[in-house]
Image (cartoon, rainbow, N blue to C red; front, side):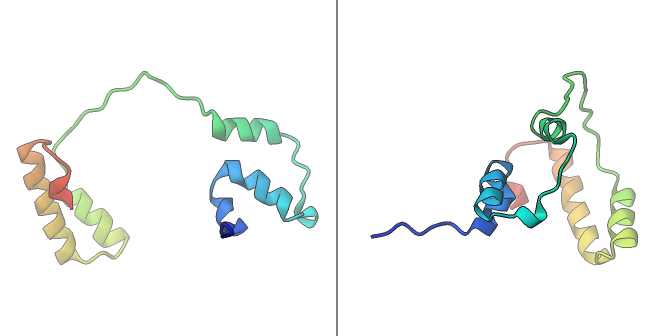
Length: 102
């Protein structure tokens, strides 16, 4: 039984497969001479990170969440208010498990 070959188009989703897919498709017409390709690749594969940060957990800002989702992104105010209510209840109880979110 022959193993089904993955579609090359799906390989574009990951960088490691991008090069292989690019070469296998023989995309000479799309070849672009990028002067700083190595630096660009390195920037995405090895980004600068800092261990110097602090997370501060606060109670969710219900009006800001509602404004952002409803006014800026046209979410249903009724659905957002129910979700924010559940979020506030969960934040009052503290973190226990992820089960309450699903």
